[in-house]
Length: 168
Image 1 (cartoon, rainbow, N blue to C red):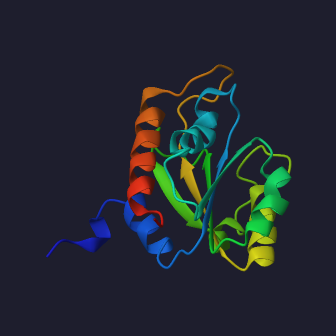
Image 2: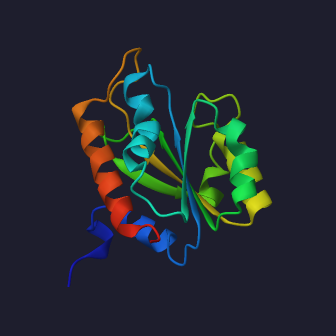
Image 3: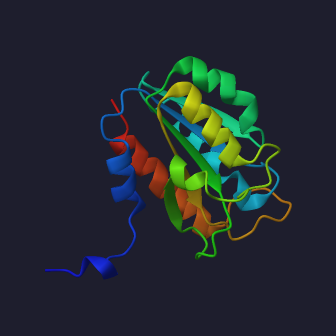
């Protein structure tokens, strides 16, 4: 029997459990198009465009997720997944899923105008749905365009996984 304590982290396992019983899903990508890996959340949304069912709503938030709060609330989703780059002291490209309750205990984890924890609290309260952040460790967030190879590989893995897992 494998030692579960030493089992490697699997965002796929966590995300599958989190998406259990999802009826409608909003997936919102956050990121800056001119800050290399910071753009990963939006890139994932772009790669999902035209490939998901009508039960999945894709939103490219770029650097202002707070501008999309009303749209998300009007959709009344059962699940809201925010995808963003975040400095978590992991290896570049590593992915972690955090539910809204854990996010609300974080200090501001990004450079967005409205701290994501405040955004999460508000959207969770107004929709009554489940909210989580899928965070990817960036390698480079300097000014420039394009993702590094490590983050590109993670983005491809996330897109492939979501296409197999989100509601049909």
